[in-house]
Image (cartoon, rainbow, N blue to C red; front, side):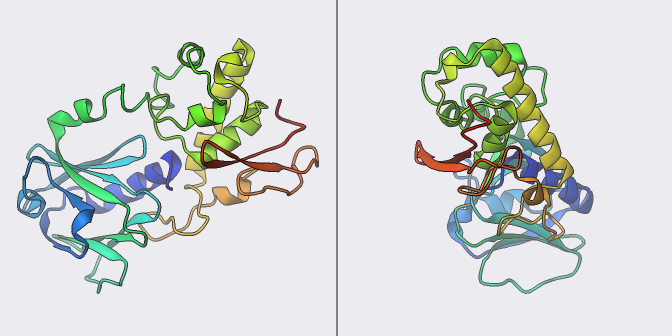
Amino acid sequence: MPELPEVETIRRTLEPLICGQKICGLRLFWEKTLVSWQGQAVADTVADQRIQRVGRRGKYLLIQLEQGWTLAAHLRMTGRFIYYPDPQEPDKHTQVIFNLTQGELHFHDVRKFGRIQLLPTAALQTVFSPAKLGPEPFSADFSAAYLLQALARKKRPIKSVLLEQSLVAGLGNIYADEALFLAGVHPQREAAALSEAETVALHQAIQAVLTTGIEQRGTTLRDYRDANGEKGGFQDFLRVYGRGNCPCRRCGEKLVKLRLGGRAAVFCPACQR
C-alpha cells in the first residue's frame, strides 16, 4: 500500500502537470472507484472545474478544485495516477480517466480497492479530524513530547500502534519496520513501556526514514509508480522490511519475520531490544 513518501512523490510529480487545467469530463470504467458526497454526482460536479492545487493528508491525495470541491483519493494497495499529455486508450486496469484541457489523467488500479471521493473543501478538516487522522510527521504537532504522551496510553505492541493513523498520519508497514530498526526498538515491545530516550529515538527515526523515502521518490516493490510512470528507489535502502531470514545489514544476525496484529513485522533480534 502506498504510504506517505509514495503519495507525497505522486503529489509532487502530479501537481505541475495538472494544476491550472480544467476537467473537461471523465470516463468511469469501475463504478465503485468514485464516491459521491450526499448524492452529488461526481462527473457533473467536477466538469469544467479548474484544478487549483494538489495536496496530501496522510496517505490521501487531495486534488482541490476551484468551486469549493476536492477529490480525495486513497490509493489503497495498487492504485496509481498517471498523466498522459496525449489521449491514451484505457487498459483493463484503468478505472477512471479524467479528460483535461491538455492531456488525460488515468487512475489505474489492479485490485480495484482504491477510491476517489468527492468532498466539499470546507469539510476536509472535519473528515480528516485529529480523532481519525493524527498529525503529519513533519508538523510541529508531531513532537517527541507528543509521541511520549500518546504512547503512554497504549498497551499494545509498538509496531501495531505505529500503524494506527490516529497516532501519526501516513506511516505504514514499510516505514514502521524501518523506523523501529533505526531506533533499535523491538516491534513487540509494549508502546507504553518505551523509555523517554527510546521514544525520542523513535521520533527521530520516523522522520529520518520518511525523509529518505521522499528523497528516493518512494518504494517500488511491484505496483507503485509516480505520476510520470516512474519507479521509486527506496527499495534499495531497505534494512529490514521484506528481508526476513536475511542477514542484518548492520550486525549480520539473521532477521526474524513474524505476524503481529495481522501484519508482517521484520526485525533484527540483536539490534532491536
